[in-house]
Length: 371
Ligand SMILES: Cc1ncc(COP(=O)(O)O)c(C=O)c1O
Image 1 (cartoon, rainbow, N blue to C red):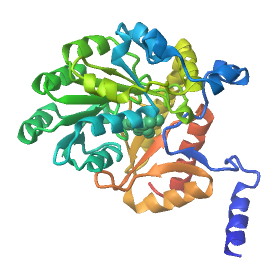
Image 2: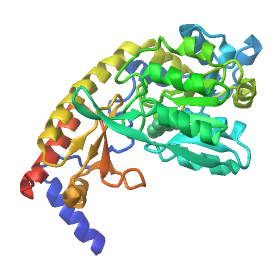
Image 3: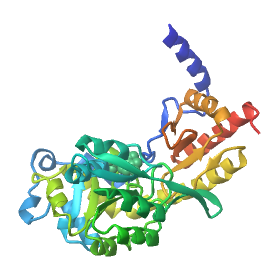
Image 4: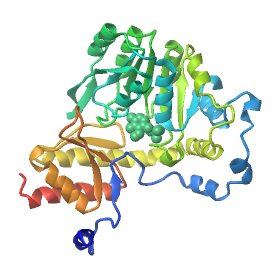
């Protein structure tokens, strides 16, 4: 009965409505446009070999055609390109490979909750470093505070350091000079840079090879889940420094990874230009959102180099806004964790979806007379 009542209430809201009939998930930084059309074409004609037989790539002395392709594009020996089931898997493997009971890992405080979870699986503990708030291009912005990071590093001597760039949920990236300064100070420690959101705000790769060459304990992780819109296929990859042989062996899978998803990764890389067009639309929509949120009393959007925006929402209307959006099938992530009690993270969708979300938030403010 209760269910039916709820149903009819929401049906009323949906009637002739511009709102989606099913929940629109703008809460996990997934793609709403999907991958490049060549991916669908390939899936329609995928053959038995790829589905039923193991890869024979190891006979060529490589892990996979995909790792070879990535290595060639970035100028690496294939050995130093790692593959995984999403970059979540890489993060876990790196920590499981190096952390022993009692070890510490150094992670950002204002970051993806998942970082906080993994060390304990190995009996390790987290040490958190804080980010600081500033501005960039006149827009509020989180910044890596490298001096503080180095101080905390020296005090705690962690086994692994995690940096995310762009960071989730704050959307900021680390400045390369700051990164170099940090790596110079922490050279002997395994440092993982999570670049899951690479390609949205910047497509610069010029630092990858020089940094990996200069810092032999550095590992830079990327994924096909975000820019390339293949989260369901679970493909991550990384560039590993020369000292990380133990990790390279730990992550290598003799029988291959997933032959279909490896192929899809190759197709995605061949179509970078297509993806960058979508990224350009995101840039325009983020500009629209900074502007529009800036006009709403108490809302603070943070500049982002990713496919999402963090917005601080006035506490007085936070719960009401959440309900209003939920009833209209618009799902964004209202954060509720130590570092973020009043913020929400909005994943970008299509131009129309982004406009609908922004208009709906504005409409709510109007209806409750929030000015
Ligand atoms: C910062 C960050 N890193 C890594 C991931 C994991 O992505 P995947 O395992 O799909 O590559 C996510 C997922 O949302 C993320 O936000």
